[in-house]
Length: 64
Image 1 (cartoon, helix red, strand yellow):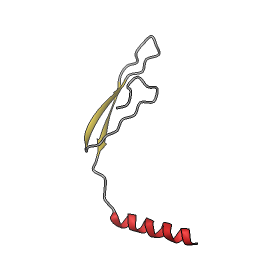
Image 2 (cartoon, helix red, strand yellow):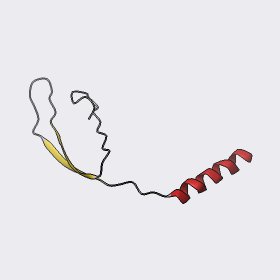
Image 3 (tube, rainbow, N blue to C red):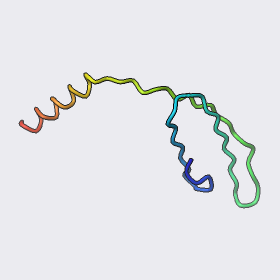
Image 4 (cartoon, rainbow, N blue to C red):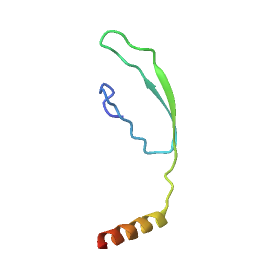
């Protein structure tokens, strides 16, 4: 996770799994009640045919 004190923190998930994230907001005086969410990360789907198709389309468009 990037800086947890940032106004726009981000989270990079690099492994499949189920992750629980908790967010608490502070206005400088008081903390909010925590809010929790579950994130399910899956292994990316490999589609080599799509890469081939996109390469051919881009090549065709550059010739047009």
